[in-house]
Length: 230
Image (cartoon, rainbow, N blue to C red; front, top):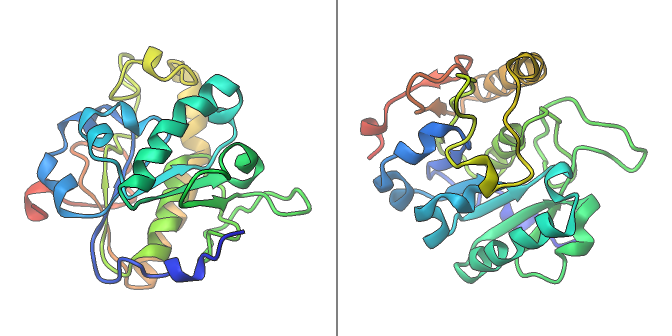
């Protein structure tokens, strides 16, 4: 395993932008991406600006998005772009054999050696992190580890309107399918309690976590506006 201790507070004091994949991501002012370090996940590379200007941290924490060779290979060019841009990738250690030949790749997981799933926010996510059933939950634990500055959420719509689920068409990311509304309610029942735990940890440790996503339904996070951070 690569040494992760050098990553602790690597952006000390700086805001860190964490990208959800909600439809509003396409409307985030580019100035924000240019101004702060950026963390994104899964098919974030389908966002044209973030494809041309790779994120500083690329996160593949789940196994479901890496279950086929086609899906794994789809990520490799972007991981190489991220590394070439002096960025880093965090990939689930249970899939590391497919990515360990690449530069600047670190492992993460929510399952320990005994096969037990972690449930709580973890301050050392490169060992194990708490499963929030959502890659954004993993990113928020990584962000806490990487910076002491404000963590800014964008693209976290956290809602289903019957039309769109991501900022890209689902066929651009074959591992995603449109989620039935009934399933989305189950998703919220799993994710929301963990998001509330994350919000509580940040608050109780005097760390700023601000959701800049307009009209987001992730109301457990303090709301903010783009204009205050550009």
